[in-house]
Length: 170
Image (cartoon, rainbow, N blue to C red; front, top):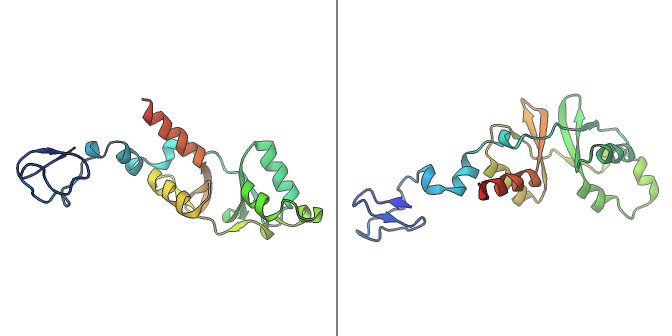
């Protein structure tokens, strides 16, 4: 609900004008309480999702070894690093779309040949809504979490959905 600052009338969220006095409500500050569920996504930092520790390989690692690492850790992606700096991300989707059904020698290629270069990254202090927007717009399911350009975690769309489900059933 939005409270009209002119007459005190409670109005439904999203109303542009007060139902009682017809004053413009477009510029009325919306409180966290009035935003409800949306507020939680807009205000809550990614660190509450407890990002999984990143699994990384060097850019010259073979694709077959990177896939084995992903399987061993039951993880949908590996970060590609040069030293401690992230230069790419290799996901299940990269493997499916760029490798599957191609010749067998593809698996001996370095992961740098099929990784997604310069992936979108966030910081643990960034908001969940920001991550959700990046995932939606970019069409990806994993986002590396950085601390001063060093990977410290990875969140997935499953982490965000699990969080939303927990909010819904509180």
